[in-house]
Image (cartoon, rainbow, N blue to C red; front, side, top):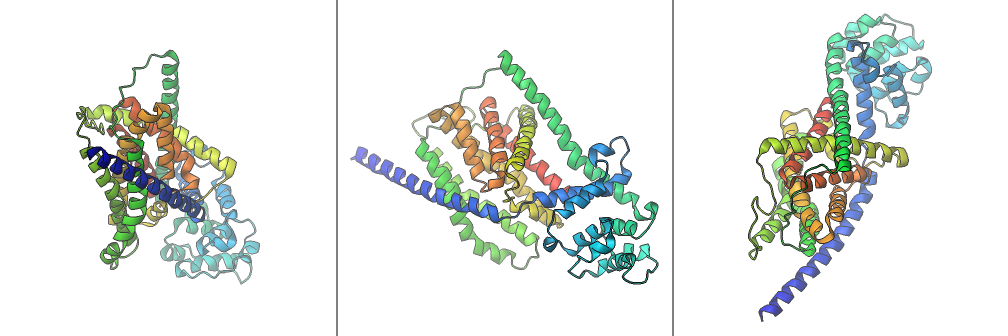
Length: 455
């Protein structure tokens, strides 16, 4: 009787796994298609970096200015603005382009939309007077400074209206933006150089075959079918679709009296927590069902928090080595196929958020919850089982591809796959899961910090 029950249970698991896999294919196909319609954050981030560079230029030493802002940041910003269709520009961008154009009068004729923001009216009036459409009037810089809190627009309009450089440039604003620029461009540049050095060292170690052998792989005694149920059934079908839809009305009740973006941030936080519940419950039941095997030292998932200094060292070095490869992949994809769009909606939300509580919720979601949960599923459970059944090489590749697909973004697929490869190799080479969580947190943390600087 018992063998028949086991066969029935096994057949039921296989059937459920097949159904989950089919639903996952449909969900991911739809999600990847939808990613084409999601706007890319790249143009907005690039434009914001160009604005910061122009504001920072007066405070930068001449020796490092070419490396951080180039020879002529005004031209770079002008060309960046020209790439944006006029009907997609808001009034601020139109005024910026008008102020940067040599022929202000001709450019002003293309400004079809009237300026609704009263704080910009003095600038528009000044530019119009400069164009010769009305009798010129003295341009009162103090009036613009008092009514407009946009230092870049003020500076461009001031210079275009014939103001002297010392009147148009606010040195305190220039210094603060120079500091932003140093972090947003200087820190990643240093990290890339260090990463390249570590990669060269690693290649040399492999060439000489002088590295320490990798620890033996410890995998939960689960099958590929179990992993399909965990990832396809728990993570995708229940986690990405069913539970968020179930929690959405509850989330609406708790957030309906809140203002955006705090409302959106809290929804994201609640939605992400809800998404983690099904796969975590399934994984818990799978681990509890392992009764015929002795649990290894460090547990089935091999968290191994200690020694913690070694975990930080491995996580940091993995992050550094992954950075140049991920950035190179992203650059090559943009060069070969262009910007495919589909940026993570959280990017725009972070850029628009100024409320500390909203940013704290987004920080907790992206830098703490996401690394913990995703590493637990993809490198804690999935990778070791795949490596045991398919071999280490194929296990690393397949787990990285699943990790990239799970983010449902065509434009970010290739860079995420490379990041997944790096995280998988770190998991196998260290024999621990905790360094992978730290590496993932560092990656998300640097991205989050850069968005705060650009926001």
